Every structure is written in structure tokens, then in C-alpha cells.
Amino acid sequence: MRVDARRNRDRLVAAATAVIAEQGPAASLNEIAQQAGVGAGTLYRHFPTRESLLLEVFTTRIETLCARAHELAESRSPSDALTAWLEAFLQHCRTDRGLAETIMKAPSGSDLNCAVKLRTAGAGLVARAQEAGVVRAGVEVEDILQLTIGIALAADSPARAERLLSIAIVGLRG
Image (tube, rainbow, N blue to C red; front, side, top):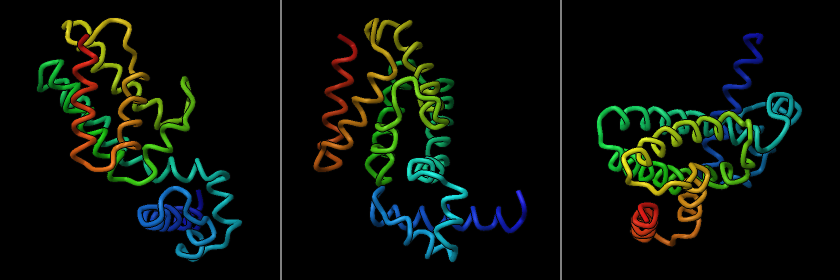
């Protein structure tokens, strides 16, 4: 990528991060381009769809969640690792406007980078928890991710979200 193209892309991601944090995932793409100091055509050359821009904005957050999964797998029991990771995932979904909606729209089996990374990180934790007998057989990582996202979207407060997640975690043990 040329230096000026890379600079434009970086400015678009920075502007999108700020505007989406303020307005949510339905933020005006024209406003994002304007904030970045580029035209709409430049935005669409780098990000042909809204989803592609949202996924780029959330890549760093998703990579942090994945790194956290690996760290927890090495330092905690299977049950504690899965619980702590789901709590971190819930926090990210509640804090970063649009993250939950973006992930929710990624179809099951999607090859979108963020969805694949999250499924992979979560699958390792779920498998460990199932091997340890603390999560029932048949529960898939997709189930747990969708459940956590649903809680993030439905809860009216952080306390309610945490309470709902703890109830769901008890249900996973069945």
C-alpha cells in the first residue's frame, strides 16, 4: 500500500473509532470521511461496506479478547478461565458500542476475521471446561457467544448484565 493510501486508511479508522464510539454502529459514513479529511470515495475504496469498516474498528478489541482467552487458559482453572473470559467479552460488548451488533451479524460459520478469532479463542476455553466436566456436552462456542451478546444487548445496566451472565453460566453447567 502506498504511504498516502496507508495514511488515509489510518485516518479513516481513527475517525471511525471516534464517531462510532459516540454515535454507535449506524454513524454516518460521510461524517466519518469528513472527520478523516478524505472523500467518501476514499472511504469506500478502503472499506466497501459498513460492516468492513466496523470490523476494522473492532479488530484491536477482538485481538485483546483473544489474547485474554489464551492468558486465562494458562493461568486459571477451566471453569474460572471461561467465566473470566465471558465477563471480559460481556464488558467489551457493553462498552464498545456496536461491537455486539457487528459480531451478531456475522453469520454462524462466517469467515470474517473477528468472528473466526473469537470462536477459536472461545472454543479452546469451552473445550477445556467440557473436558473438566464443568460445561455440559453439546454446548458450542457459538451458543455461548450469542448468549453473551444477547445479554449485552438486552441488559439495561452493567449490574443487570453481570447478573444475567452469572445465571447463564450456571445454566451451562447443567
